[in-house]
Image (cartoon, rainbow, N blue to C red; front, side, top):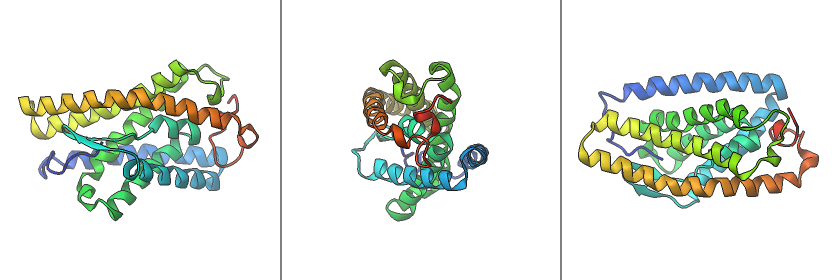
Length: 225
């Protein structure tokens, strides 16, 4: 979902700094809550694993430039279910930054837009999760329809933010609108794949119920609260 260089020029890119700051501030709030709940060591461990996975999602898994951006299998809902909201957010931010610093320095000017595009849909996912998942339901017991709803929320959020940056930067021209539509259509494949990945990961996690209360997984993965 990398925003292509030049899509938003220097005179407008200031908005990405503001949105990224807001997303970063909310991430810090989630991190503080996570430290209070599980401790700093648990948060650091889960965040580190999430960051390594995010780097792999961007660099190892297939990705292709379509329309105004790149289509990636980011697996945001998977990170949320396995590690929790705060580690997922930190992992996305750190993994994307490491990628920019090591293999894609041309993406660094777009970091504010990219991190906003990744994190705000994650926060939306966290907000609607209690509406989709009944209280007392461990994540390993989720159904296909529930993980589909979570994945769709996250991926549609990414598409919406990419579309916003594209129209904000280039306006509502026919060419730009077609590029946004192509990008959004390509993400339908991601929405189809991610729930299957979630279910497979949760199935594996279900066999590891003995470590459900350990520091490496979100407590809700195996427990009722």
